[in-house]
Length: 357
Image (tube, rainbow, N blue to C red; front, side, top):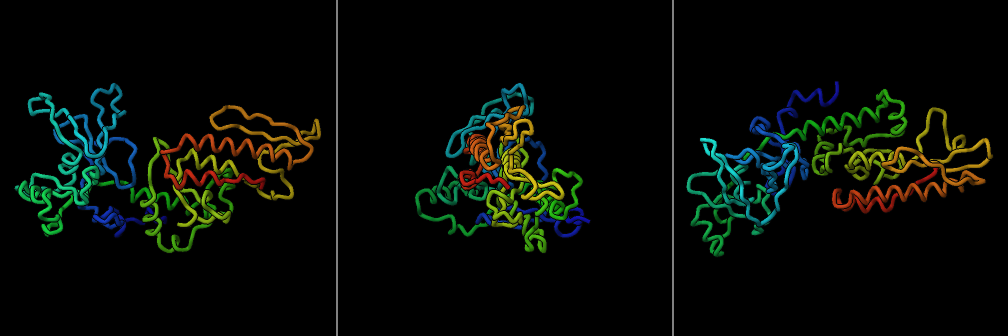
């Protein structure tokens, strides 16, 4: 039975969240509130949750202070993203009789109402780090008007209030999804996949013993590194930062949009049964029995047909031309992801070296 099927015990009862210091923490799932009106919108990380703004039909606020709406959208599955930070919002609320009216508000106010527990008399929102543009819910604290005035005047610090703010945690599927990803990797490393093409891509794959012994450690790694890129499926990659050993481990793995992960997979040689470097041609190289020459063949990303490159006397010469074209294709595609993927991943692609075998 897989680890995900075994989540009937303690693991099924917890959800990972970030504490006030940004550290991964286990939280009882029974205390998490289901999201009543979920939307499909690209989240910043595994812990961002969008909930609908109270008394509205078309506005959602996240626990990171991002606000979206579909107020004037014909397609209600598309959203306008508001500016972030220390800004002003106008939202349209709906009265009990159905009347719509404008209300002036701010990201901090919306986040506090959705994600902070408020006690009587505490009507003002204070930013703990003093940065009014940081509207992450655990950077916010409800205070009284008098406390707010004293805090703003510098007469007191929020720590001196000696108060523990209580936060509202919503359900997210990140923890269960992380276990599913773990089991997928485990299956590939165990050679249990049915697809021959998929199996050939992972013929030498292994998983680090630390993750094998403790699946929770993988889940934590995954959640700490997770992000989303448009509507693409996100994959765990072991090659971009790897040493060629094919091991899934914290030092070698990163999370990539499927488009980039597929691009990498198609940039290295995969062997069928009984094939070795001694009995196959280099990556992308073909042999013409008609002319007795070698040539490269490449299908550029986003195109429908492969094109044949120049003919050469040797396979090495043909690969040299293919390599130039393939690496140009990689960088052209990666450029489209700039500012969509983490900078350290984007820069790493500049070191990709397409090899013949």
